[in-house]
Length: 160
Length: 246
Image 1 (cartoon, rainbow over the protein chains, first blue to last red):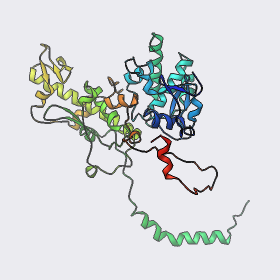
Image 2: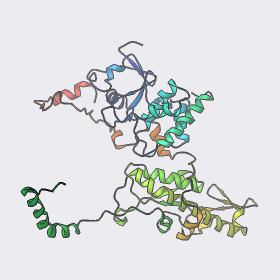
Image 3: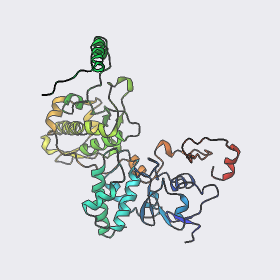
Image 4: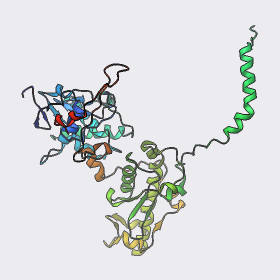
């Protein structure tokens, strides 16, 4: 991939003139129309804006869009690609009906996907540490933990 | 031994408090009292949360307004799980604001903390009551009817739909039924899956007010001050359409 482009959910993307100083969050939401990337605190503290950047969790609200050039960006929209099977994380989140209001859940899912990519069988402490930075005011943390375990089990059985 | 020393300032302060007390204390009585939190053990209140309409639809009367906190979805999932119905089969009725008693707040997490358990008991009571009525229609003991989609099935595989159980009259629960249906503190069963609105949220479908991007809406950006006390000297509104980002 060249350094003047990135991929967003598998699609090549460039930054048009006038967008060089925007955050990745603004770029994804307003240029790409990806509503699944949520604006929360705007200072990288709540985790609602978390996306996958080369497979690792990144806070899109503070990351300049230009910093994503040459890299792969995946948002929750990429967890259920058109014509493709939903990822293990999305399946687990749906099966266990994790969200209440749902505003933070795209960030939760991205953070979980990053964790599972790094540690396919995360221990309780690993999970707590990784997920602690994504806040949920509804109190769905127990269901998030259960969904994380379910996603790990799906991956263990060979799921995507 | 230390002898307390009263300063002139301290003495004046004390005198001022004594002088103000007859005015301030009665005025406190006129302050509105914060409404008490609902009692989860109140079976009477719980009984009013669910019922069956005259047409045979399970209805949930939400005790709180929903402004995007997900109260509606979460409570609906609880009723669905207890009743053995898909979430979308549960009809939700929001309360009219003027008909509601004053509440402290309509916060999502607090609403679930207060209402999840009593609602689960009420839904379990409704399931038992509907099963009893279905058994009566079939002429068998209640233990011989099983819940099936939109109704109950008897030993001879005869199905009694919820519509027939209602028989044109709504089913209203009694507090006594709620008290006996399900022990307090029993685990709430897991829902069979999320209602459609939550699936949409998880897949990134625009769902919140901030997700609305009407056709032709211009992009808005927040300009952060480069330093404390910075002031905007001038702006060039005509430059906006030339960025290509509208």
